Image (cartoon, rainbow, N blue to C red; front, side, top):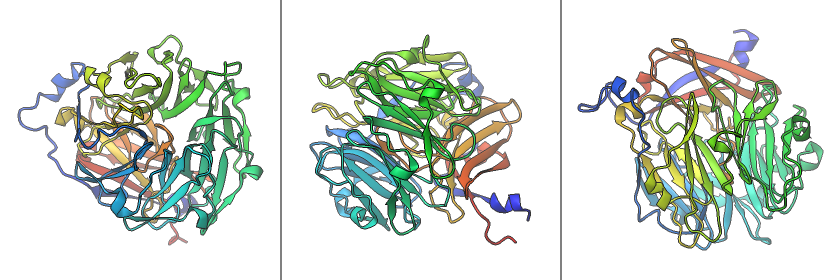
Length: 511
């Protein structure tokens, strides 16, 4: 095997998490007729009484028990946190029985397999001073706090945490954004974490609320856009590939200078909204929202002005998801007004001609103030939606997407793991191409967003009308270099109600 193949060795496996017929169920309208009409978004609240408690703030999906479906962690203020175990679409709170008894006000949560044992661990950050953050090691479905043992117990007014491999050595490092102290980067050395903030140059001391990690310049390693509040300028820390970072926000014109003290950037969301194969960035803001369109050369242009996405809504968080499986990403944006339990949220449906507002009336009554996260919890092929509202009269509703089964199945869900089958490829770019019509779109394996949250799960692609096999290309950072590999001839219909698991990394058996 040549050196290139040796370093980009890839196995294509299927994780069977359900089954279904290739043809639409009897009685469903013909797919061509469905595609000829614009489907109104249709969501139904799942287990309404279970998801009715107020005070929820952050929400993060992961398959913590390795049973093939996504479970949901919810962080609260004024109530104990919850871990909802998903049993094929039915949820039950198991936080107490698995060791996640957390009563402090939780502002942040991130899942990641930091110890490379095959199951996702959970980092939890708090709002109050004097309370150290926690890292719960997952030991086969039960959790033990090891933060002080491994060196990540520092506290502060915590916002966005993220597990990611910034140095390409194969394990997950930990970045934590704070609103009251410099952001912190911990390098994973195999048995413990080392604080490398000073030598890396990424310790932004402005009032950070959101961070978006992705490969902004196409060199394979992960860069960090830092969303700052209270009039502070934003930062964009380019990874130099040698363990150091450089803030290039001002040079790129992305720093937003001169904002008033009551304005600033909040939540971030990464997605390929224009289907050109690179990753764009939406920034929910106090002030007009921003859509940084990737120009493909390491530069960005604000494409929001003149579109519905430029609204001034006092926005907090957002997430991209193709709710109707038409091949175009849609965007849910939530808002926060301390005086209102249900400040109006926004759902923007994307398409070739731009965005249109399409929030169903039922969601006007039970929306979000903080957490926004799409995920296919019931394994039917369409993305469902978890929201959190921390108002005393709010709830944390879980909405099931009610796409017709044939349309729901027109999708691909791509999981990316390392050569050992572990979920440590956060930040990898996944690109789907269809040769029959030139369709292309990219996704990122989650590095954070929603509202101070990071999940572990597959990248979801809705597919536009059309036929023919697709290719899936993965780009990631390993051993100091950008790695890219492609699987061709993937027939989407063969993967109905299944995740496609791409296992990639060093093939150590090759000469």
